[in-house]
Length: 199
Image 1 (cartoon, rainbow, N blue to C red):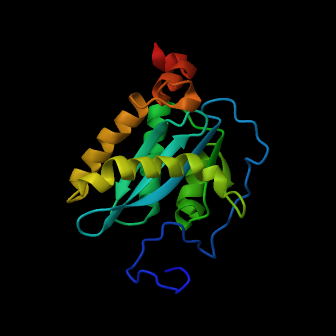
Image 2 (cartoon, one colour):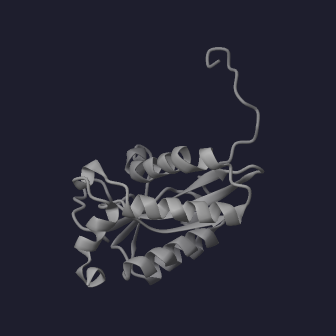
């Protein structure tokens, strides 16, 4: 199919679309030793196929321990959903990260998003050319969610989808063991790094 140039002609959702008028921020993670939770958070948007159409899921993840701190579902690809996920992450963590890393999509270069990060004293980092691998943790999250839940359920509407994603995210944070975390769950590692929350 590739040799013959045969491709699907249906509309494919795109979640990373740059806005030419928006400011793009430099990439801050090159050669950075990430040793602590809340040092770097990352965020991304993916599309979720449903029986009719699709929705968009935004997540905010702690880079070091891979816990999902906040997420939000929307039927539009707007910055408001990103801000809801950010607010949920702040409520979960009880603090802000030093650095927030994202791609250069128009949601993340928008004034609403960048001003919210600046007001919280967060340094803004954006993936550039050759930095795709730095989004791999959250890309793995998307793959696991879709293959273990989304593709098996065929959610009917946003209410049903939100309930299903909430259940899966709880499983991911509190029950899934991670080899890179010495076979602990993200939340076990998170609590060990947050003595105030563990008390």
